[in-house]
Length: 303
Ligand code: SF4
Image (tube, rainbow, N blue to C red; front, side, top):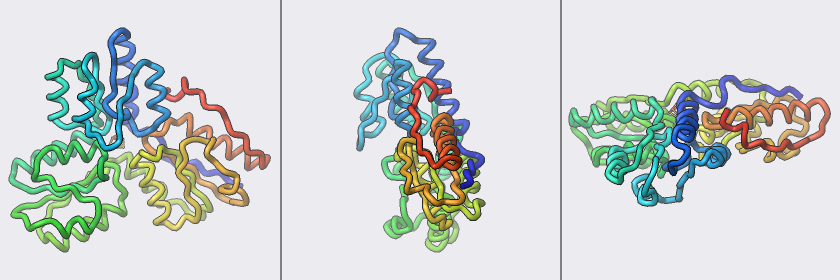
């Protein structure tokens, strides 16, 4: 059995920055309540590690960032790597909160592009994942931003004088390609700005280059869009067995038994520590056929 750690995998620059900002904030303000507006990155283990530093995370299914802000009345609020709308920033300031913005540069760049086009009287079509905070912040910019999740959503849109289409940074290359092609059919003059971030793109391209793989393990949280997209890409590439798992503890022997080549990747918000545990466990299994599940040391997750 051969274990192939896919390169690149794991934390992107936006996640590293968000985690460092959270750690610095906890150190700088030891006696002030600190609340994260949503999951700092979409990984439950990272959120738990932040809680240990005294950073409380609030997240509630179906609630927007603006609604969640009602629950924070004092101290510091940290905005997550997924970006935030101007409305949320303003409301936090009006409440007298100290704001720390961990938005990724690539996310704010897409927001700026959208605003520039709107100022030039374009309607903007935005491909994203429903209820995802990054999409929520972009759609909040203007009623002239139209959210699209599938090709079918294009059918419900009217014609526009000037139209541009762009996307959430963590979408899959395949998924947006299909929607962009359908969009070109409907709007001949559409301007296309592919905003998949470099970290997402190179992780997806690495999966597309894999050959003769029997099984791919994607280490990532089920809420992580980029981890889910890595799984989808692998299925598109006809890798016979693909699993999304949070930690080495989730691995079942049936997944890996009798496989010749097993590749391992991880989403941009997955701690390297968790992915390394998976790789080490597989390597041990390859040598001994013993499946020993490791304990997780939460203190190592933010390094
Ligand atoms: S996945 Fe891309 S957009 Fe998201 S935090 Fe990482 S670099 Fe930024």
